[in-house]
Length: 297
Image (cartoon, rainbow, N blue to C red):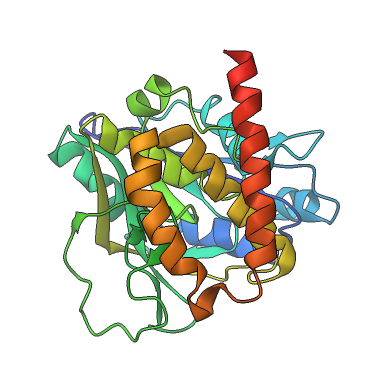
């Protein structure tokens, strides 16, 4: 924990969730040690890694609080384990395959002090060793398909304005603890991954709270999830969680007036080729999920 005598500073907890993250975790922790923000704690939650992630953490010069899960609890479950054992008024969720600029944390949490209606903040994300953008805020289309502003673009300052956005990516974001508590934490129905951060942002905006993109908060993201992006396994998990998000958040009117017209248009676009059978499977999974929820009620 980094300590400060300034009583006006808000306590911040950084939750780093690992699973077979040995190639990245020490570099991530090192970048956190450089932070200009003087008062925060670091909690690493390991989701039952089978490589030497734990050994690398224990042998490093950094000494975060370490939680070792005996099973893989998924992104939502692991992050919930972390923030519930933290004491920060602001909770930051950070992927282990990231490196943060020295003023990243200070910039990321600043909007919370400036505006009590801010619930969530996200940052500008580059691909490694470059100024090629990976994320400058995110877009949620009417059918809940998602996209990132600026992805694959050279950063020329076109996304340097702090602004409200639909949602932020889960690679690195900060949440006001009081809001997390009000919604019961990260929704574990999105298992193993995808849309848990989208769901949080959607809930915040429904409460009239703000989701902010903070351009001055910068990280570099190696983007090395367990499910390789654009693989069949990735698409199955992504589309399954997308339909769950729709089931949990869309009214019948939303399904008819927002989802259906955009989904039909998207379904016949070239981008959907190669994934249409997976999407039909996701519809079926979504129907089963809806029926299961109805039975619980």
